[in-house]
Length: 129
Image (tube, helix red, strand yellow):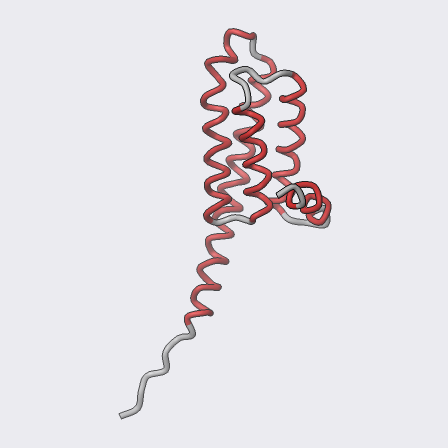
């Protein structure tokens, strides 16, 4: 009797992680685009409407951070976590907070998509760990 060759578990895990990473990238790109729309609407809203919009805005950021923790990169998780901290810091973020959130969203896009600016982002977000 000859034993059946068994697949290398490391190869299967690598394939699974690659598939999950692709799914995260797809989901995160859509979620960040939705978040950008929510943030733009939030900026344009009157003060009274912002209090109603704040919960869904923070919820969207939490979803991105959670999915980044599970499937994404540590960099995307760190940026999303910092973004969540700014959003949760007050019930109605100031204009400076909204500007900072906009910059972090652009950084989050770049972290999800990858590219040449990743080292700059790692220096900014990962060093502060």
